[in-house]
Amino acid sequence: MVSNPLETHDSTLLLRQQQLPDMPVTHHGCSRRTRVQLDLMLLAIEALDLSGSEKILSLARQLELNSVLSDRVTVWRIRNTNPLRRASRRRPLSQEEAKVLTIIICYLARSMTIPLRQLNKEAQQLREQHLPLDKNPQLAFYLSRFRAHFRSRMNPRRSAVMVYDTDEKLDNLAVELLEKLLFCTGTAGLTRFWVSLFDGEI
Image (cartoon, helix red, strand yellow):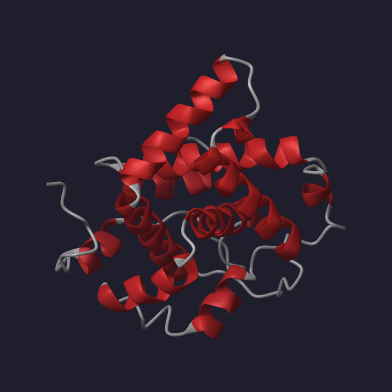
């Protein structure tokens, strides 16, 4: 039986948080790219799991990270540091907040390892066969929810959002995020994902 990482309290979590290397951050907080990537990864999780939003707060409490993610309003304010959002706020994202979001993303991804593997495999096979991605029902459901979330929450007047002006382009982004989430489930996924938010490499 495969153990669920959410079933057991990780007593070393705060130590892990401290061991994530501090990255170059200005007095304005984390970079634009970091803020966008963290929010998009959470958006993909919400598209995968109907209760994804609730699990973010539940996991924060379970892992004793609720001093940073205390309630829905706090999560909303932190995620709205993404400049692509309709409700974007001119508020910096601190390195501590970014570390907590990184931990949350990796733990939630790890809890979905099996479906992530299946969806990534299906997407790869469909592309190799030059078939539409929505031919697979589970993948189609995820893609549809991701497109709906993205279009309802992102500001269509932003040039970086205008790039995704077709279903195909949004589907490609959604699949790219699936691949990144699967990457986060690996043994060193937490640290490597954290570093990738600053150097652009995975």
